[in-house]
Image 1 (cartoon, rainbow, N blue to C red):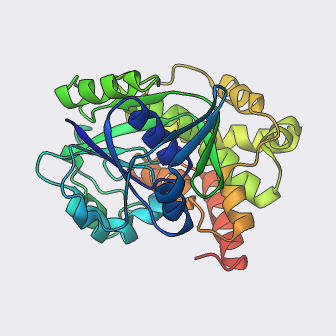
Image 2: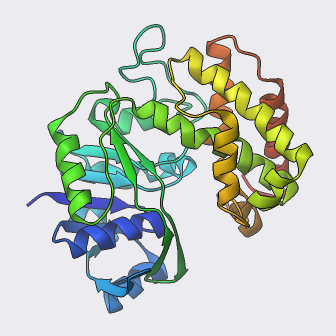
Length: 325
């Protein structure tokens, strides 16, 4: 039987683990503390529009007990990856597929991208090369996460909307490993298309995140207020257009225009972005993966990002003033 390990069994990881386990896939989750204790005692509780269900994935706190997996699904935030590498090592063998369900620009971004960017390290997310050394890009698949979920109490995941996890190989090919993973996720009741241009879809999500997240952290505005106000909407739009220029120089094709992407953000309503939530809780912010990496890549392609640089400097200072490393 195909083995799947979810590392980062919070909201999205818990949702994946619960759905996969319910469909009969062999699932392990790496977790510690009250969340792990609750899952061991009562199972993993999933609450969604269908009601409440309980599954019992294998809960492990020492990855050495699980050994190399067929699929290792990473649902951590990008800044947590370097510190997690020693724990991830026992789960990765030569045949393991690493599924990068991580927001922002990933460490594998330039793998099989072609000249002149092939193999270039994105310093913002992999400053010393440790991440790409431990998580080989050749063994990695991209995964764009769309669902929204949270953990209202230990051992419980509440799924509020969305069921799509778009998959894609860095080289755009249709691989056996991708097809099998897609089948497993579809069997679990999720949408899991395998796309040939995964970076295009990555950028559509990043496009909003690179603007909405840092600006919400700076203003404390929910997404609806950030977009409804003409002045902050204009800043969002200008920053997103800078990002679009960078992406297109890197070969990305946008299927929608900037105003439609902003409208999609507005439809979410009175939502606190993940960066604003992390700021309020004193947790590290996803600054580098969402915006720092874009500003860095702008330098690769000689695209000016004056608004991006200004917002990046301000949100970094905002984190420092809050005592967040």
